[in-house]
Amino acid sequence: MSGYVRLMAENTASDTERRGCLLAKGAAELAQHDPTVAGRSAETMTALLTLLRTEISAAQGHGDIDGAADPEGLAALLLAVGRGIEAVGKAGLAPETPRNIADTALAALPTPKG
Image (cartoon, rainbow, N blue to C red; front, side, top):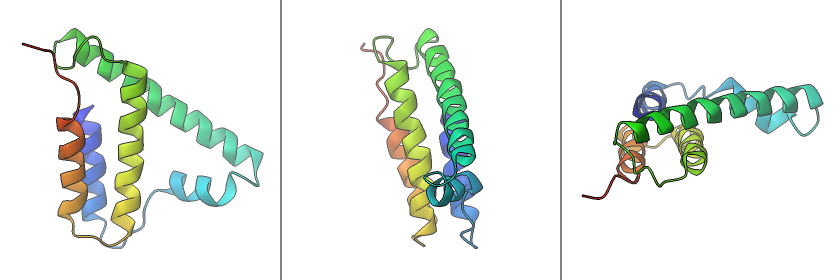
């Protein structure tokens, strides 16, 4: 899970041509007009949410994330962080910006008390 967030940040920081993500671009431009694109975008986002939720649940089982935290909500948050990192990266900010976003998001995850 932290690998996913850090990979999103690193890929965005190193994308000097600001190409971005085909899924994000396609969904933003075509989903409202093309049911096939909308369906595939939703399937992909659902698959990402499932993977993130699985990783969060595993981290909870290992004691790295508070077991009382909602894995579904945290998965949605991390998916939004990843998508947001891509959007910020396309704005041309300094390469350390997406990395800082990733670090801040991961530090905000709830850890077990004590």
